[in-house]
Amino acid sequence: MAKSKYEYVKKFEQNETCLLNCWIVVRIDGRGFHKFTQDHLYEKPNDIRGLSLMNFCAKEVMKQFHDIVISYGQSDEYSFVFSKNTSQFKRRSCKLMSNIVSLFSSSFVFYWKTFFLNDLIYPPQFDGRIILYPSLQNIRDYLSWRQADCHINNLYNTCFWSLVNKGGLSTLDAELKLKGTLAKDKNELLFSEFDVNYNDISPIFRKGNIVIRQKVAEEIMKEKNGESVKVKKEKSDTVILHDDIIGENFWKKFPEILT
Ligand code: ATP
Ligand code: ATP
Ligand code: MG
Ligand code: MG
Ligand code: MG
Ligand code: MG
Image (cartoon, rainbow, N blue to C red; front, side, top):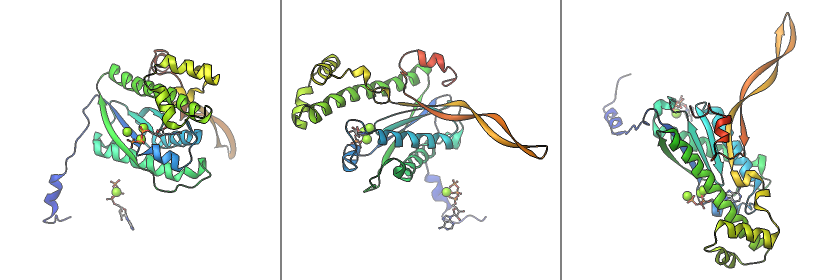
C-alpha cells in the first residue's frame, strides 16, 4: 500500500521492550476502591463476592495469556507473572500492560452480575504497571512482599471492623485505638475482646489468592468405529490456592513454576 505523507508521525512512537531473561510482572490495582467498595455495599473487612469476582477475572486473563505462569491477588489488586522467556507482544511493555488491564477491567464488568445482586452504579477503573525481575530471589521476594502486605492489611482491617461493627466504636475511635499497635497487640485484641483466634480466619483472607496451572483429568466423547465413546484426557486448567508462598514448601511442591 502506498504510504501517505503523514506516515512519518509513526516514528514518534516509543516501543519499549522488556529486558530479556527477566520475569515480567503486570500488577493491576482498582482505582479508588476504598470508595468503590463502599458505594457497592461490599461487606467489611472482606467481601467474598468481590474476591471471587477478582479471582474469576484473573482466571480469564490466564486463559487468554498462556505465558502467565503464576498470579497473586489480594484486595483490589492482582499481579500476573509472565515466564522469563515469553515473547508475547514481542515483550512490548505498553502492549502487555494495556491488554492485561483492559481484559481484566472488561471481565470485571462482564462478570459482575454473576457475583453481585446489586447493579454496578458506575464503571470501575484499574491502573497497571510493569516490573521486571532478573533473579529468582527477586521474583520470590516480590511475591512474598505482596503476601506480607495482604497479611498486614488483613490483620489491621479485621481489628478495625471488629471494633466498629462488634465493639460499637466510631471509625475515628477505632483508628485511634489501633494507632501504634504491633501485630501481637492486634492478635491479643481480637482474642481478648472478640474471642477471635486470628489463625482461624479463612486463609483466603489471610493469605490471598494464588492462581497456577495444573493438569486435570477430563472426559471427552470421541468417535471410534462409528460409535461415540468416552475417553480420558489431561488438560491444563487454572486453580486457585490460598497457600503460604513466603516459605519454601510451596516452591518445593511446584518447582517448575519459576523456571
Ligand atoms: P488507589 O486508587 O490509590 O488504589 P484505593 O482506594 O483503591 O486507592 P487501595 O490501597 O488500593 O486504595 O485499597 C483498596 C481498598 O478496597 C481498601 O480500602 C480495601 O479495603 C477495599 N477492598 C478491596 N477489595 C475488597 C473486598 N473484597 N472486600 C472489602 N473491601 C475491599
Ligand atoms: P490488532 O490486535 O493488531 O489491533 P485488529 O484485528 O484489531 O488487530 P486493527 O488494525 O486494529 O486490527 O483493525 C480493526 C479491525 O476491526 C478492522 O478489521 C476493522 O474493519 C474492524 N472494525 C473496527 N471497528 C469497526 C466497525 N465499527 N465496523 C466494522 N468493522 C470494524
Ligand atoms: Mg494504590
Ligand atoms: Mg486501589
Ligand atoms: Mg490496592
Ligand atoms: Mg485493533
